[in-house]
Amino acid sequence: MSGIIGIYSPNRTDTSQIAYYGLYALQHRGQASTGIAVNNNGFVDYHKEQGLVNEVFSKDIIDRLMGNIAIGHVRYASSQQSKEKSNVEPLVVGYRKGALALSLDGSIVNAKALRDELEDKGVIFQSTLDAEVIANLIARYHRDGLEEAIIEAIDAIKGSYSIVMMNANSLIAARDPHALRPMVLGRINNGYIIASETCAFDTIGAEFIRDINAGEMIVIDENGVSTVHEKKGKVSHCLFEFIYFARPDSQVDYRSIYTARIEIGRQLARESPVDGDIVIGAPDSGVVSAVGYAEQSKIPYRDGLIKNRYVGRTFIEPTQGLREQGVKIKLNVLKDNVNGKKVVLVDDSIVRGTTVKRIIDLLRNAGAKEVHVRVSSPPVRHSCYLGVDMPTNQHLMAAGKTVEEIRKELGADSLYYISLDGLRKAIGGDEGFCVGCFTGQYPVQGEMNL
Ligand code: AMP
Image (cartoon, rainbow, N blue to C red; front, side):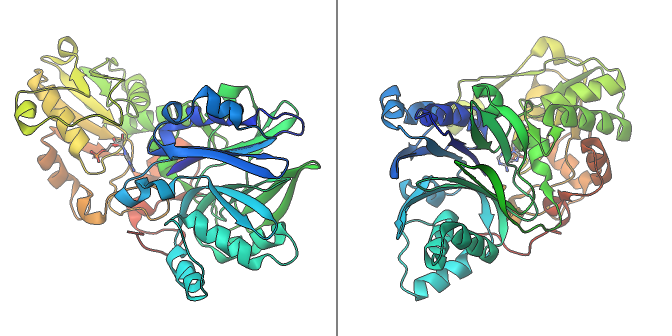
C-alpha cells in the first residue's frame, strides 16, 4: 500500500510545495518512507528518505526542488526489505531520451517473471521495486516514443497499479484494468493534479475533476489532459479502501468513505442487533461505523477508548515486565463510560486479531459487564497479493476457523462479521468490488510476493 501524487503546472515552479502538502494528507497510506521528484526544464532533481513526510523534508529541501512537474510517494512497508533505502520511491532513472521518474501504488503479480526475463537479457536491478521492472520495460520498448513504450510496458504487467510518471515535458498516470487501487484527477490553479485520494486535493485547494478510469492511461502536458490508452477489465475496487484504508474525508470511486462507513455500521446493526447499553468504536477506523451502528440501534454512542496520538513509528514496545504491570501506551479505556455496561464494540476489521483481543481485555479489566464485537468486514481468510499488506494466511485470525471458534479465542460475549452482501449494499453496489481477501476469488491470478 502506498500513496501517490503528481502535479503539472504550465507556469509555476513551486510544484514540490504542493506535492509536500498533498503527501502530508496521504500519510495514512504509508509511513515507512517518502520522496518527491521534480522536473525543471528536463533536469530531474529529487529527495527521498525513510521516515514521515515532515521528518524527511525541510523547507530548504522543498525550496531547492523547483520544477513545473512533480511526483511524490509515501510507502507502507511490512517487510524489512521494503523498508530499505534502495526501495524508496519515486524511482528516478535515466534512459535514452532523458530522465524518467515513477511512483507506484499496487503490486505487480508477474513482476518476478518479468524481472527474471530482463535479468537474463543482462539488465541489472538496484532495488526490489516493481516500479523498476516497469521502468526497465519502458526503456526496452522505447523505439518511437515514450507514450508507446509505456503502453507496451503496461500491456505486459498484471496486477494492481496506480502509477504516476514524469518525463521532461509530461505527467503520465495509469490505473490497472480492474481499478483496484484508487486514483483521482483534479485541477489546481491552471494546472492538474493526480492523487491516490481526494483528501489530498482538499488540503491544497485543488478541485476534483474525476476518477482515473479502469485501465486508463492519461498524459498531461501543454495541450492539457488526454486519454491515450484504455485497457478496461472487470471493475473490482478494493473493498479494504472503504473499510479501513482510505481517509473518511476522501471520496473513492465517487463514493464518500465517511458515508460508506456510517452505512456499514447501520447495516451491521440491522444484521446483528444486540441488547447493549453503549456502542463504542475501536480507534480510529472503527469509530465512524460505530456511530452508524448507534444511530440505527438507538443505543447511545460513547467514547470508550482514548488513543495516544503521539505514539509514532519510533514507538518502543514495552517489555513483558512492563506489559504485566499493565502499561497502556497506545490505548486507554474511559472507565467511567464502560464500567458495569454491556458494551457493543465496533471494529473495522480483524486481521491477526491482536488489536481486538487487547481491546476486549482492556474493557473487561475496566469493568465492562459484556463485550459484543461487531466487525465492519467479513472474516479476512485469504492474504492479499494485490497491494494490501497483510500477513500470510497462517497468521490471519479467521483463516480456517469458524466465527464461534474466533469468538472463544477472543473472549467476546458475542461476535458478528458483516455479510458480504450487506457490505456491498452499504457501499452502494452489488458488483465492482474485489472480494479476494474474504472469498479467495481474486480478479487477477497470482500469489503472495514474499
Ligand atoms: P490485527 O487484527 O491486530 O492484525 O489488527 C487489525 C487492525 O489493524 C484493524 O482493526 C485495522 O484498524 C488495522 N488494519 C486493517 N488492515 C490492515 C493492514 N492491511 N495493515 C495494517 N493494519 C491494518
